[in-house]
Amino acid sequence: MIMGLLGFVLRAAVVLSGTAALTFALLWNAPGDPAQAIAMARFDALLTEDVIDQVRAEAGLDISFWPAFTSWLVPLLSLDFGNSAVTGRPVWPDLVTAMSYTFPLALASLAVGLAVSLPLAVLAAKRPGSLVDRCAVAVASLGVAIPAYWLGLLLILLFAVKLAWLPAMGARTAAHAILPALTLGLGVTASFTRIIRSGILEARGQPFLPAIRRRGVSDRAIGRDHVAPHAAIPVVTVFGLELAFLLEGLVLVEVIFGRPGLGTFLVQAILARDFPHVQAVVVLTALIFVTVNLLIDGIYRVIEPRIGERDA
Image 1 (cartoon, rainbow, N blue to C red):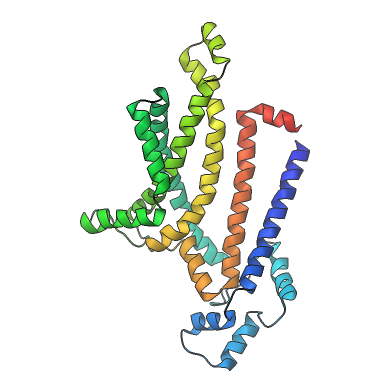
Image 2 (cartoon, rainbow, N blue to C red; image 1 turned 180 degrees about the vertical axis):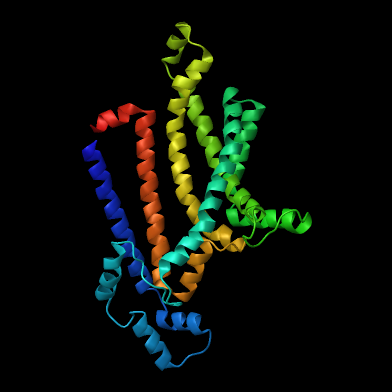
């Protein structure tokens, strides 16, 4: 158990450090003059070379790669992302404000996906090959095929423009989160439906179940004690991965719906070449991936204790 935890921590450290180094290198070697982009974002006007040189010095762009990387990495070890190159404000408060819009939307999207996919997958798995099963598979395939940005525009056109039921832009009220949550949630529904259906069918096909039935165990007890735990392992995997990948899909969806979350935060930072903001979002996303993997591993050990026994 201890060795497994140490191994995970080591892998997490490698992932985080590699992500930080690669992100910094890509931003540092991106085409164009970052000092000019920062100056334009800061002053919103055409500037002289003297002003651009001053901005370059203030942003630490007048030194070589390794000293700049070291000066950024050392504070990062204490989760200090520094100050914005454009506004000069600390990165953390702006990042927390963006997260306060993004994380509730991600959780709402997951809730929509589970609320639709779970009953749909259970109904489909009860009668494989039936009309309900074929419809569930078709819905899942359609959900995977439709890009989130196109679905978001269709929902805006229908519910905000044609019917005028819901607002399309902003994040002032809970109603503003409905269309973005549906846009992302329908994509999550597609993945969940396929995985839950396959997990239930695979669990019901286990060779030991007929012997348990012959002992007089009820179908409800078999479903609760044997089918559900076996089918839950792939569902837990997909749930964790969808939570992580939702943060990527939110970049497009938040821009489309004009929400001030991590997506808008990242896009504005990239356009302004605001290195501290971009690096903070990337490192935070990598940290979420690592944390989700750790939680999935812990849930695995609860659902299936033999996983922990093999690591012992």
